[in-house]
Amino acid sequence: MSGLKRLFCEHPESVNETYFEHLIFAGGFGIRMLVAGLACLVHGLLPFLFKRTGSQIICELHERLSSHGRPTTSTTLDKDQVTQS
Image 1 (cartoon, rainbow, N blue to C red):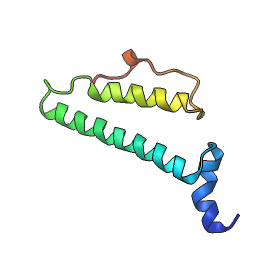
Image 2: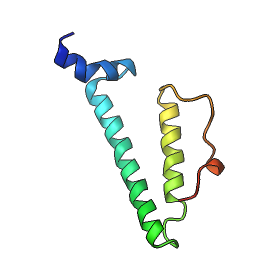
Image 3: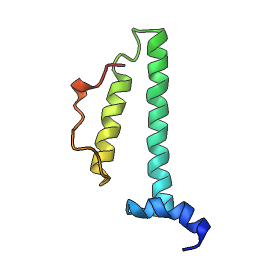
Image 4: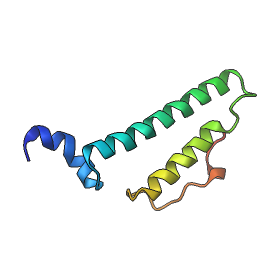
């Protein structure tokens, strides 16, 4: 595998994805993380808004990653363990 191709394909192949499948999955994941972060920032300023949005998105992302066939830690993430944001 050429050096440039290896840079772009080695990791996606290690998780059984093509470059574009990985781009879509990781990009969607990143967008959800940005939404959660923005909700937490707004919640910090206006505590009556987005009381559980950040923690709910974290739990959704954990579940999505766990069910996507990627290795995760042996502990499971419970919604009650996540700090409410």
